[in-house]
Image (cartoon, rainbow over all chains, first blue to last red; front, side, top):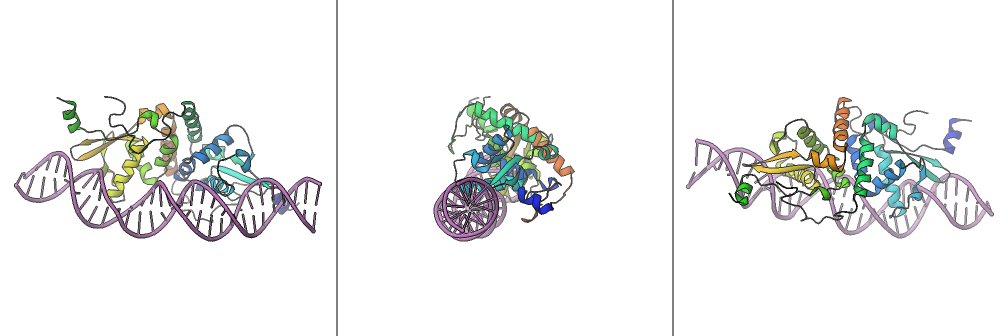
Length: 134
Length: 134
DNA sequence: CTCGTAGTACGGTGAATCTCGTACTTTCCA
DNA sequence: TGGAAAGTACGAGATTCACCGTACTACGAG
């Protein structure tokens, strides 16, 4: 079995090497609600998921776009399996580069959700000038 | 002394209440190199700094823009002091909402810097197809 | 071989972002 | 009173981003 044969069964898609992963890029990737949701679902135990299994509220093209942003930023890894793209979190790589970052983001997302919708949308003028107290 | 008198000496600028701070917005605010640099300098001990003291490599207007993004996302607080705008990190608010998030970002930024420039810029085609090894 | 499924590529649109320069306001000092 | 210093407001230009639809490429089932 040539390397090509193995590749045909499970082609890894292009992704940055650990040394090329940049913090700003990772933060940007996580700063989108849809991508954050993807990351949370991946972290929630399901080791591998095809893209369509997420039931994202966007079109197929947009879905592909978000998965690519995540992959190219170094947050996830993807490989083909049949006609599907299986995605996994690059947990160990991220933890090695930015210790505790992923965990705190996931924890923060869960906490925010648990806190309830709260003030969901926030109008441009919704900024308090005497915020907490004095 | 009326509240107005106190206000004249140190006007707090508009900022979101803790309940209105959104994770995605905070991550977006931190996902910019210049803003991340501001946050790092604020965290590095200097409790209060005027905007110009950072020596940012951008114009005054751009500087104002970045400080506003940070303030409106809930990352920093600003108040006037004479003709200057003093900025402070909203550490306790952020830590209460997203435990360990700020610390891990700061730590990650320091680690990335310590790691050296590494592969600084990364061209679009710079993604390895057999990334770590196999 | 043909069809359906999963995903990508490409092109386009509208909104948001980053950047700047110039003009204006506010504050302090001489 | 006049001027310098620190920011803000207001466009304007260039880039990026999120989103879509359509057309295309793999792969597996029948």
